[in-house]
Length: 337
Image 1 (cartoon, helix red, strand yellow):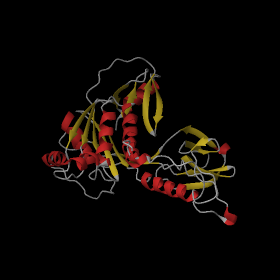
Image 2: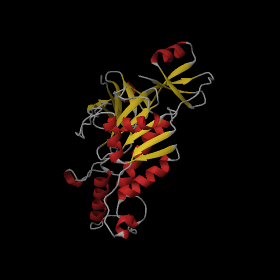
Image 3: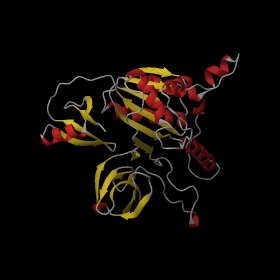
Image 4: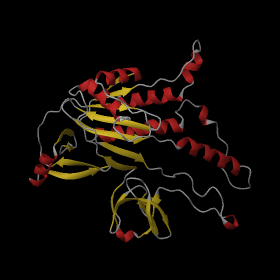
């Protein structure tokens, strides 16, 4: 395990060992920091050090995706994330509700032009690729990353149909948007799926085809071989521990329940604020420890488990909670031998 290091001016440096990190903290040359649940140290004194090439292997997917941060000497971190897949249903529900309001005697906004026909990315596609970019921005802030190796994905095309091939696929639009934004962070190398399979076979590594598995061999093995192809250094994975990340779904626009309760009253539903706490914020409760904020009922807030998202209680009082930081995802660690 290695600890990320950030300079006094906020510049990422080469990660260090836990022993040396403790030594720097004890000597007063560094302080403990947490960012999105990941521990790192911030130097309090100026230190000069050279950085090596660090590459990130990226394996996109439909349900789960993987990132591996690696140099020639070490594999620093493996990350597996759950893809955002609820936006399409939410947009459809929003459209149905707006149409139903136009049939009732109730105030509603005037009809607008069909924005779905514009050249902008569809909301569901944009949310998927922006989720990857948020992970990348998080990693770039604490690791001196210079290269990104991405497994390129291709949508099916038709022969002798130029119009179809150029405009039909939101997948193509989404990945091109992702590559454009990614090149602002560093150099980007693309590999096809069969190239990844060849690299994996050359190292004699076996892949698990259980796409919902959290094992290293399911997704992180591909991101590892992509990063290892660029920086080299290993014939077998030297670090199989995985940081699991799941996004927290916030109901931002749904202001009340879909179905009315007794007497036709529609109860409020959806917000990003719970009695002054931003939903998803990490808090420390006197009884339940570290958890994150969900909804609220009257003068109490709901607290959820940071690893699996299960609700712990609905009756937490504000005075018993200490706000630590805002967080937009659930995290857990999986240690493999």
